[in-house]
Image 1 (spheres, rainbow, N blue to C red):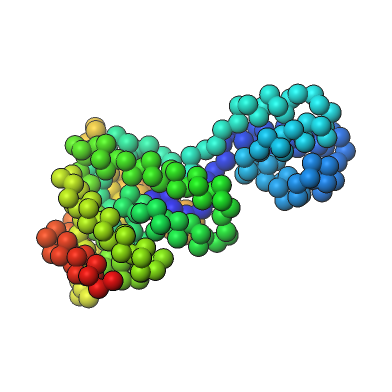
Image 2 (cartoon, one colour; image 1 turned 135 degrees about the vertical axis):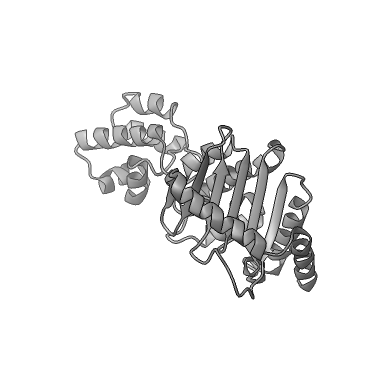
Length: 273
């Protein structure tokens, strides 16, 4: 999912920031003093120097003028690129996704990124703490929308989802957002390569109480797992550990509603909105 923290800055962003910092310090300016000269806050200066913020043209031009017009910053700015809006710990998993022949997900916290609507995703982004700025939100949605293409661009890959009923009952973002979300998920259930099951809220036996699970089979028929928490994620390549998670997921498939009953429940929930 990678829905958690701020994406890691790119190498080019960090390099550009280091050049700005070196030139600023060589000029004997503090961040606050430099910020006054370029008409940006010291916090913006810090974000650029640490590679967290994409420098716009006005910043580059003002910084050039304040630091001697060497041309170094203009040339460096031409090579700066954003890192895709994925958390650093998630990028390896995202790479594996692109070639997977099977992807299975159990989620109990939020509707998985591959199934989200833009309105639902933006609700999650705007509720992040610490808050995200507009550029970060746009980068995250762009990365998520690109990942969602996998469902249709990989018709020979089997996608399976087990989703807790309460993910829709919570009405994250409000009624309109939830209504659109349910419609979207119902539409995805019509894809031949996608199976979506709902785990009912009232369920006496549940093999997934320890948390979310993601499983993936590579073209070489090697299995990987991925587990994510509040502030980090863990790629699991160990076959013994993956086997345990596979058994738990298999048990949950038998405990969740059937495909037909899951679709019927989604339709009833849609009617209640």
